[in-house]
Every structure is written in C-alpha cells, then in structure tokens.
Length: 302
Image (cartoon, rainbow, N blue to C red; front, top):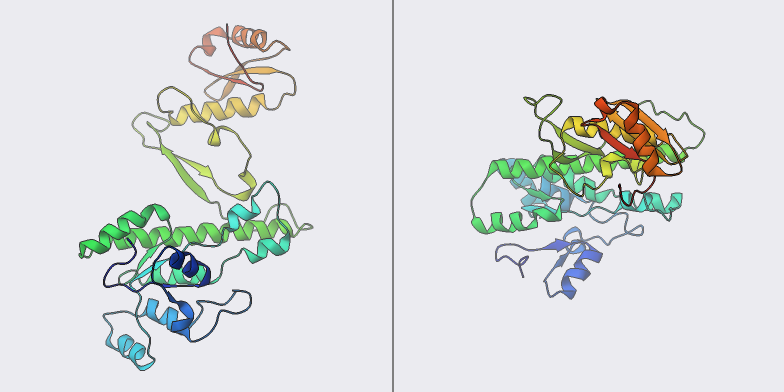
C-alpha cells in the first residue's frame, strides 16, 4: 500500500511485476510502454527509447518535452532498481559456472541507474532498500530537496561502480593463463566504522573493508567480531592486523605479542597458555598495553 501513492503509476518488468501484483499492487508492465516484448531470455527488457527517453528528458528544456510528446513518451519521476545478484552468485562457497556467472551480469539495470542518476535533478534514483522509507517520506512531503537527490545519485553511481568492478575482477580471474596482476585495478571499499581517532589523537579516521572478490571469506581483523571493549582506534587495528598476520605464519599453536606493529614476544607450545606466558616473558615491558594474538581457539586464560 505504501507504493500506491495517488499521483504515481508503477511500471515494472515481468518478474517484479508478478511479485507486486501478487501483493495486490497495480502495475503497468514495461512492454505496455515499449510496445515490444521482453526477448532474448530477458536480456532485453528496458533498453528502449520509451524508457530511457522518459528517464533522461530534462523537464526544464522545452525541446526535450516536445520530443517526448512527439513520440508519445511519458516521464519517470522515480527509478528503483535491484541489480542481478552478481557478487553473491560468484562469491558463493558452492561455486558457479562461467556461463551462470555471465548470465548474472545485469545490463539494463545499470543503464537505468546511470540514466536516472545523471538526470537526478528531475528523477529520484534508489538502489538501496534501506532508502525506501526515506524515499516514501520525501514523496509524501511534496517539497524538493536537491541535497537528497544528489545523495541518492552519488549512491547510485557508487553502486554501479562497485558492481562493474566485481564483474571486471571476476572476468580477469576466469582468464586463467594471464599474469596474476592485472594492468589496472579498481578497489571496492566499504566503510565499516568511524574510528575514535587516527594515528594521533587529533586526526580523524575511518575503517574500510575490502569488498573485492579476492577477500571473500578471507577472514582477518577486517571482518572480525568485536565482543567487548570500547571502540578501536586506528593504532588498535594496525597492531591487531600485524599480530594476526604474524601468528598465522605458524602451524603449531602459537601466541604473539605485538606493540606498535612490532612482535615483542613469540612462542609456540602445544599448551597455548604456556605459549602465552613465554611470549609475554620475552619482553614484559613492551607487552604491557600490547596486542595478543593466538592461532588456535582459547577457551580460558588462567
């Protein structure tokens, strides 16, 4: 019911249209606007002037509106797109065939997102379901907010850039015989948290997680769960990462104590508690306030 605002008509492609209709939402199917059926197993649905013309037309340009009227094209005020789940598909632990991976590369969706984001002065674009409540509130409010529009446009372009970088990375890896290192590389980072401070207390900092396919299920400090304690600082993360990388170099049960990214005590023992005691004993002064890491599970420290 939230979708059915009085002054809006909902236009959708086949699968989404069916889901909305089953929930009692009235939908105009996209082929009713394009006068052309979906084809090529769904590869071509929205790539049509009747769709993109209605998205890209500038409302303040009389000749744009005249062109739409001459061709019987209506305008779109809101574009909401959920892309094919390419990232989730190719990063699945069960694996995916090359053919299935290719089929999950969305074409029409990113094209609509980019078109709407470019024309964000007239078209709201939403790519994140978390923004749905804000969108509905905005539409009901009846006032224009350029900052809100620009924020959605930024998120849209960022979303498409991340999507394309995942496709690029995956295709490079599928070409098995080439150099391990691609000639160019786009790194997709997602902000995990804002830190208490940077390397020094007067500096601001934030912690970003590498979302590239190479880092899926890689573990480490970036994806670790903090169970207690105050928010970590830049230096805390730096030391924790150094400790983790060091202790992971050992196959036997090992404890590492790190201070300012430098190991000040390392010990391997079958009894991990004994390994801890020896690691601390190596430099008890530096161990104070340091980071302790183990490469095995620790149930209790006595």
